[in-house]
Length: 36
Image (tube, rainbow, N blue to C red; front, side, top):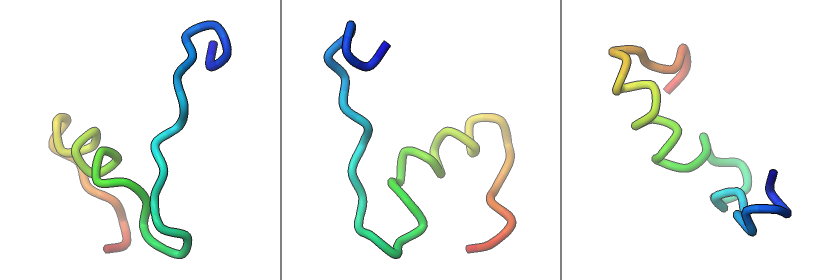
């Protein structure tokens, strides 16, 4: 899929909790991560 669509994973700072889009993904369903 990645190669066919020429899409790259979203980058984020090593040691961080990941990209903000991950938070937004869960928020859409009314969920949150277990750890901040």
